[in-house]
Each structure stands twice: as C-alpha cells, then as structure tokens.
Length: 271
Image 1 (cartoon, rainbow, N blue to C red):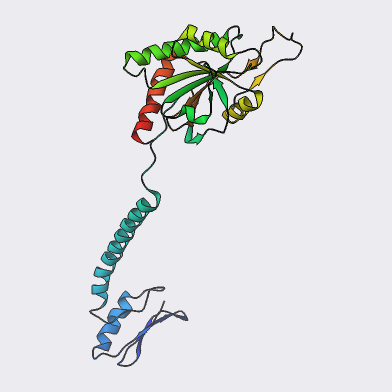
Image 2 (cartoon, rainbow, N blue to C red):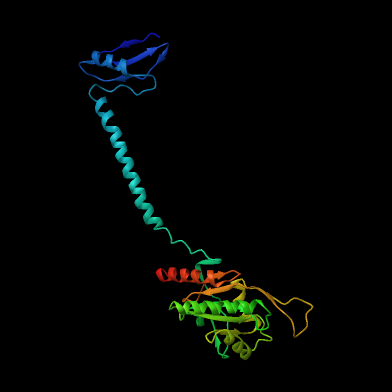
C-alpha cells in the first residue's frame, strides 16, 4: 500500500491509500510539517483525527481517570438511591408446618356466643394470642386428639413462663347439637383455661369461610348419630385480632411449640 502525506500551515493532515480517504484533521501551527509526520505515524483507519501535538498525551492520561471517577460516582449514587426507594430487605418469615399470613389479615365481622353464653365478636380476640380449632363435641377421634395436643402445648408454654400469652378455643361446626353447656363441659375436660363458642350457621360461616375452614355433613346419615367431615387446621390470631398463621395437620407439640414462639418473637420485634 502506498501512502501519501501532505502537510502545510492552514492545510490538513491526511492519509490516503488505495483510493481510501482516512480520517483527517486541520489546524494552524508553525511546526505543521513535523506534526504531520507524527500524525501519519499514529493515525490508523477508523481512529479520530490526530490533535495538535501536546494535546493528545494529556487527554490520553486524564480521560480514563475521569471516566473511572464518573463511573464510581454513578454507582454510589445508584446504591444510595436504591436504598432510599426500596429500603432494607424484610425479615424472613419463620418456617412453619402451615402458612404464615403476610401481612396479617383482619377478621371478618361475626357474632358468636362463648361457653358462658356471652355474645362476642372479633374484638374478643384482641390483646392476646389465640389458637382456634374448629371441631365438635361428638367428634369420635380427631377433635379429642387436637385438643389434647393444645393442652400439652399450654403446659409446655407455662413451663417456660409463657402460659398466659395464649388463649385456646374450640369453635363448633355442629351448632345443632353443641349447646353452650355441652361445649363448656367438653373443653374443660382438657383444660380449665380453654374456651368454646357456637352460633348460628350464618355467623359461623362468616368466620369459617375466610379462614378456609370446611365442614360438611355427609349425606345418608341419621338425624342424631351423624358425623361431620371438617378441616383439622389450627388458626392463629395475633394480639391485634388479625389472622396471623394457619397450622396444617398433623399438629404435634414438637413443632407447634418452637414455631409459635418464633412467630411471637417476630411479632414482638415488628408487630
């Protein structure tokens, strides 16, 4: 390839070869000829025009530093802005045999009657932790097992000095047969501190449906000696009267105790 070089004051430094015009530059200076030689030696196809001598070295030294500082500043600004917009990461939810409701949800409106035949609504579950089991007194096996588990949980919490933190309730799914008196006698067999409640089918459904509790009376059974198929979950209500967690069966004290304590500790840290 043949390259021709032309340089003079007021003219341009240009490289030409094989009919291709390369990048050119023009400026006025007394040493234009010497700088044209430098231009020819340093310019390559596709590069920018060669600046006047004395300018290129300074730019080559300072430009990477400026770009580096600009990049660091942009990164720092992005981190600070991200922290302000997003905030700190949320605390991880405790792992339980069931579901932690995040955020906790308020209870629906309902009206039931407790074991002393006293009417109450959602406000009754405020101020304390509450574990609710939905069952019935004529239940042949599952309900007595669950209430025995709750009684054991109550004892273990009491042994740790936490016995007064939690209330325990049986809410019937069989209001036709479970009178207030029968419910009171039934739950006190397991613990003197247990509570019970009943109500009409509409109010029971108003509470059960949002909590995912199902109760069905299989067809073809006698009018008196029937059984009811129902959920066997435990519902946890926090001191603000909100649905906080649902424990799934099998409910055993060995996992209920540490999981309940973990949920209560997290709530105490950030209710």
